Length: 272
Ligand code: ATR
Image 1: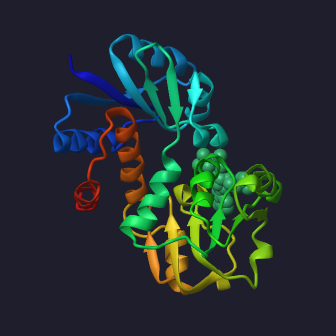
Image 2: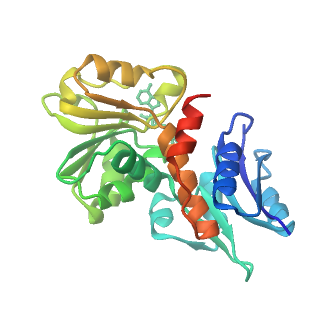
């Protein structure tokens, strides 16, 4: 019987995950089906259980259910445990549910492998202290940057996040104003500002010579952050399309034990 997978969210209509996983399955010859499921806001757990009962083998979880998925999992990987959010569930043969978070690995793979940039000894700025930022912090620190600064409008959230992740590397948090006079080699936008076409209050001088500006959001054209970065000295501008495909590949690996090729799928999505 064909193994079933899906992405669950609300809304879910524009998800690219079914297309990405269909490509991975075709490429690797896996007998699997992958669909998109809209769950009612108060019906996430029931939707997951129904899917599991109907030969579901795994799920991707997207907004706004990543924290609920974290609670629902019966076992967690370290990166999911620390992120307090899960974007991948794997239904094991013994009925247990493994929760993982592949977002951070997707981000670091896209930056290191696809953009050819190493984190070693780099000064990294992560903007935002919500779920998206929390989800990528452990894999970022595991890349051993010289230090990582978290900046957030609500400074206390950045300070608290830095405290939470302090055992894993050089990390500090605060507001945007204190960035003035400091430069960074890699600047990552993990805020939701781009969704509403807004720009976080970033001082102009933060981009070091040759800096990479990375927006975890993606869409047609440059986000306000990438536009700002290009105007203020960043050399490389990247949106989150590569991260989307790479996090999907990490999920696929967890489910199927095989790593699909991501470059052709990224190229295909870029041409859409
Ligand atoms: P997500 O799951 O996408 O991270 P979230 O948990 O609601 O969503 O977090 C949104 C993040 O984007 C927060 O860090 C938020 O800053 P505050 O904590 O100060 O609210 C940040 N954010 C949203 N809009 C922003 C804007 N226009 N400028 C700067 N930061 C913004």
